[in-house]
Length: 347
Image 1 (cartoon, rainbow, N blue to C red):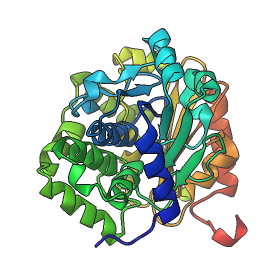
Image 2 (cartoon, helix red, strand yellow):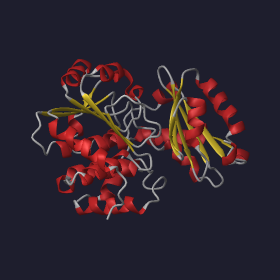
Image 3 (cartoon, rainbow, N blue to C red):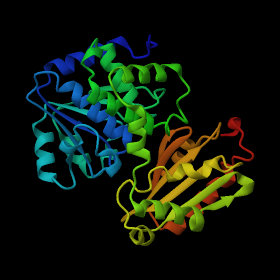
Image 4 (cartoon, rainbow, N blue to C red):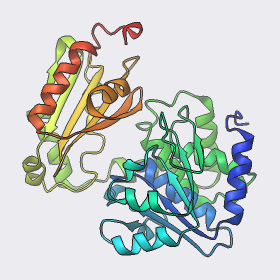
């Protein structure tokens, strides 16, 4: 029996929205990860069990190859490649579900189109501090993932029997990827009750793990070796690791979206390292990924220095400037947020 967490009034409001919706669009954040794609596809499979005119998923840009095996992934609309079509779908929608993001800016170039849409908007998300841009906001940061939240919502609606194997594979992928294969933010027994239910639906969790974590290109493996041998810097007395990748370095290894997924976790396997940072150069900004173990709040670090946020042990942000300046800012932050002398009462 799952613990009752979701407010019953929100469940009732969601049911009302779903019942009257006909032209539905599901959107998620730019650079979509496993939870963004998994929760969106899982919810999509659920919604298509009803007699709706249209249910579409739109994401701002491409997502990693290792997620494209998921049922329905081939039908996801990439806004940056099919912009006019994406705008048309959003304009014609009467209901838009915003999954796995807490602020409209998280959809990048889709932001103005999303905000201007007349459709009823529903946020379903597990990140802290949601913005007020939706008609209905269902936000539960205590969830390990948006996939967990969507699964719970469907059960609360009394529709657990409508979750088929396809949806279950997607929900499991989202939960698995957003917890580092259940290695952080996953210490609640309810999570494993849900996993048990998904297995009953017919998923092969071992095969899903392999598809996501053990089937990569040769270029990705070589890039990982380069990062670990050439690029990783250890601040031993600060229990911290940092590595950076410039666009030139990414191009050298024929980088594709998702090739660096999980890299930020690697230094945490070093004895004594409790905080890891990865800075990746993109065309107009630096993407920041942060991971920690124990009580170190990398989400607060992200919020203060890199206009970001997330969860205590897994978060990210952005920096508009040079890679060298981003490194300097990171090192400045370590003077205050130092895992070696961290005291939660001082922050």
